[in-house]
Every structure is written in C-alpha cells, then in structure tokens.
Figure 1: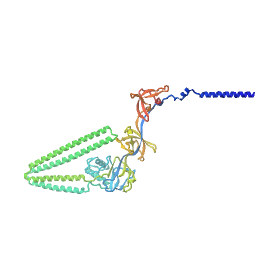
Figure 2 (figure 1 turned 45 degrees about the horizontal axis):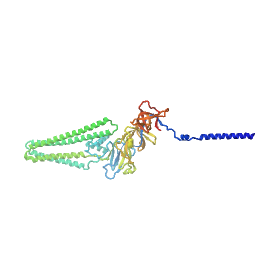
Figure 3 (figure 1 turned 60 degrees about the vertical axis):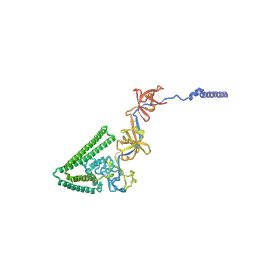
Figure 4 (figure 1 turned 180 degrees about the vertical axis):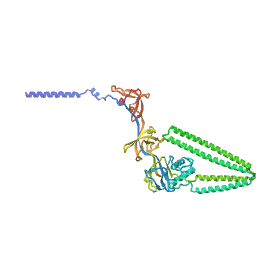
Length: 538
C-alpha cells in the first residue's frame, strides 16, 4: 500500500515538472514576425526645452593688466655732457611727487616735475612760442611766479620765472649762449658807434643846408623808415600771436574730441573757436600787409620830397646821412635781437611734465654714482618712472570682440587672489589695432573701476568680464536651436503640448542672442508662455 502511494506521488511530481517546462518553453518561443517587431527602433520622440523668462546678457571674458592712468619718465637732460652720473636723489619707489619738486640730479643738473599734458619735446629758449611754453608759464604761475609775458611767448617775464625756479632750488640756469654777455657788450658798442656816425652825418648836412627844408625832409624820411620798421615788426608779432592762438584752439579741439566726456556742444564750440581764430589769422595777415604797404609808400614819398629839397651840390652828404640812419637802426635791431634770445633756458629733460599731480614713483634708479638700470625693470634710458591718476585696467580685444564693445559699457574686474570684484566702465578703445607679442592684431581697451583699485594691485593681471549686450528687462528666452525660419525669412518656434504629439508653430521676433540662447517676442500676444516646451531637436 505504501509503495503504491509513493508511486502516485512520483508520477504527480513528474507531471508538474513536465507542464512547467512546457510553459517556460512556450513563453520563450517567438514567431519571426514577433522577433522583427521587437528588433525595430522605438518611435522617434521630440527633444524639448522650457521657455524661460529672464534678462539675457552677452558677455566677453578676458584678462587685463592693472596700470596707472597716466605715466611719465625722467631721462638724462640734454645739458649733461658725457656719461650721466647720478649726483642727487630725493625720491624712492612709492614716494609721492608734488609740483616743483627736484626729484633727481644728474651730473649736477636738476630734474624738476611740473604738471602739464604736453610732454616736453625740445629745449625751451627765450624768444620761442608754443603750447609747451604756455604750459611752462602756467606751472611757474602755480608755483608763485607771476609771468607778464603773452601766454605762449618766452619773453622777459618767463626768463625771470625760469631763473627763480632754478635759483630757489640752488642751481644756475643754463644760458642760451655762453657768449651772450660778450655779444650784448659788442651790440651796445655798435649802437654807440652808429649814434656818433649819425650825429656827424647830420651835422655835415645841416652845415651846408640853406634853410631847414632839406633837414625837415630828411627827418620825414627817418620817421617814415621808423614807421615802416614798426609796421613790419608789429605785423610779424601780431601774426605770430594769431597763429599761436590758432594752435591753442586746435589743441583744445583735439582734446575735446579725444575726451569721452565731451558733449557735442563742447566739441561744436571748440570747432567754432578754431574757425574764428583761423579767420583772425587771415585778417591779421591782411592788416599787417596793408600796414607794411602803407609804410613803404610813406618812405617812398618822403624820399621823393627829400630829393626835391636837396641841393645838387650836397648829394654825397645826404647819402652819408641816410646810410648813418640805416646803420643806427640796424645796430638797435641787432641789440634787441640779442636781448630777446639771451637769458635762461630750460634744457630738454630738466623738466618732466606729468598729466596730473601728485604722482607716485613707480621705479627709480639705485644709489648715487654711475647709473645702474639693471636693478630696476625700467625702460632703457629712464632714470625714474612716475604714475599719475587712478589705477586702470588695460586689456586687448580681438577683432571679433572689439565689434561688440563700446565705450560706456559696464564691466566687472575680479581679483582672483582675494575674490574681490570691482564694478568698472569701458572708457576707451583704440581705433587702430596693434600687433601683440603673439603676432596677432589686437585693440587696446581701458577700463576704469567705480572705486579705486588698491595700489598693491599695480601690475596685477585680473579677470575682466564685459557685459557686451543685454535685453535690459526680463524677456522670454529659448535655446537658439529652437528657432526655425521660413523661406521668406520669418522666424518661429515649435511648441509641443502634453496632449498633442505634433508641435504647433508660433511666430516670433528674435532679439539679442548670447551663450546659446536668444530673446524672443511672440508676434501674437499670449501665444507663448513661460515653461512652454519648445522643440530643439528629435
């Protein structure tokens, strides 16, 4: 009985195993059609992105160097003969320099610092004119020496103030000529001799004159000649002054045009001043020519009357007198010319004009004695380098970048060492590119920070981010790949709703694009909303 029950159980178990194996085999067996269907790729689906609402900003990231807004350098003056030797030093790196300071002495000659925008490019001598002379006069006036000369003319007043500048610092100014004292003495003697000869000639004529007619005519000739000489001198002086005024007006116009803060009205006024002074030059020349012509006519008339009054027997005496008058006039003119050109000079290099003061010493040569420039990073020939104004950030822009940036744009300067950010503004961009160390053309741009950069950042290389463009206010923004266009140039986005597998075209107008996104404005208000899904691919 037991054996029979065991056999039944074994048979039942075998049946269960057989049916389970058949079920498993059935689930794994497939028809060819079923296998092909499972091997096919899934149906294509849309790749979408959400519509955003934000401010879109186009940025340019670069690096810039912290440099002084302005700079000036001191070099050995032209008055130094031979190899320059440092004989006096009153500054060190980091020191502040004020106007009138004697900062360096080279081979016994001083170097002064004065405020002025025009770099000194020549030695200034008595009799010279120009904007650099006017700049020197202004600086001397600020130091306390009032100059009575016409602005821009190096006359007696400027000579006095130049001597004062040197003498108060314990130096003798370099004279225009080492022989000027002897030249002046010789000129005075020539005047004395000419005066004596003129007296003799006048006496010879008056002794043989019947009456005073000839003498009166002779005096008329002298007066006419003096009038002609005065007219010629006055015309030349007036023309020189008018020309100097025109140069000043042109300089003022150039400064206004290069100053980003100049308004159109300021530039227009400067242009009008140039035209006015240009016309004044023409008017002065015509007036001077007319005065000289009138003087020449007066001389010819006086000489004709003198000829009529002369006695034929006294011709030689009158010729001698006329020659004596001319010789005396020439002697006076020669003496005046020597006086005008004589006096103290300002050799090139003995004055350094700095755009703004006080300035700070960036670098200076070492100890007294032979000049050793290897101890500094200064350019060849420089004895000291001065920094003026606030620190600015100088950077270079590629051609594709410079087209996106304009003066006045906002920027951010980041000191990565301290993680300190400074708001800044683009204040200038060069019109012409320069070739960089890598041989590529680049445009120099300058940024000014809203708050002053620390002095210790001088020479640092900082990260610069310029906001080249912005939508200003928040707008709808989509990936640029979501924009499609029709044959006629109209643009649209394809919006996919959750209930529909077919996207709907929504016409839009595109705006600023940056960082792979573009600002859009739906042509039909309300047709597009934030978080709508736009097609960017499939």
